[in-house]
Image (cartoon, rainbow, N blue to C red; front, top):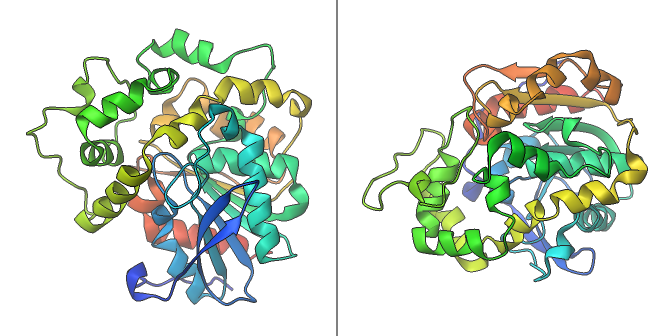
Length: 333
């Protein structure tokens, strides 16, 4: 029987616990809501957001008896941010998540990931399928998984998009941080979260992407001034070095993932992406998602869902629809 979700009250009006869990040598902040004996749903945010990106799904899951657990990934929000770039490989981050899971339950957990959170969720399922009951991933398909370790993914992106492609711009330590400092955190938060073009994210060195400082960036209906204020407060406090360090390990991760090249994801999986998501328009992404290869790589994959007219920040733009998809899928297990 299908469990219908209803509109939830804002998270601030619900009882939500915030605590620190000792991760892989660091402290990880987690937001938790729901019965202590409920099945755990681990919600993994992407770039450049926080646990807060799941603010609508957390109370919705809790109301249905699940224990929603949303960490700030290392480097973000109220979690620790090690200074070394080398401390942000996929193994460090998956290690943090294993520590969080182990601190909360001895059972397998449901995992939901978006953007970098989705990529890390693929890795979690690759390394520790014994910990995952089922997976719902948003925006980033498994085509971003382990490749030939002799190939540097960033070289391909640079060749295709040029040096100003955002992932390439993030590589030089300190460069994008200085630009963000000059532009201002609030403008960065507004500009990135309201970006809904399917075209690649290009950050020219002339800073034209951010627009004139006196120009107001209007917010969509799904993003409030209160939401922006929360993101701004956390990124002003923490900075962006930790988050962009994930990208600075892109090539290193590919080298480290050599032993898993060709491995399949052996976890029941649901995948959702918006047709206006820039990732959907990456080279080969659409063909991968809609073709046979995705199902070959993820044998327990259900038919992918392509949401029309929806851009990258799908769990915030369509909160109730995503909540319903999550619940419909995980309630089968």
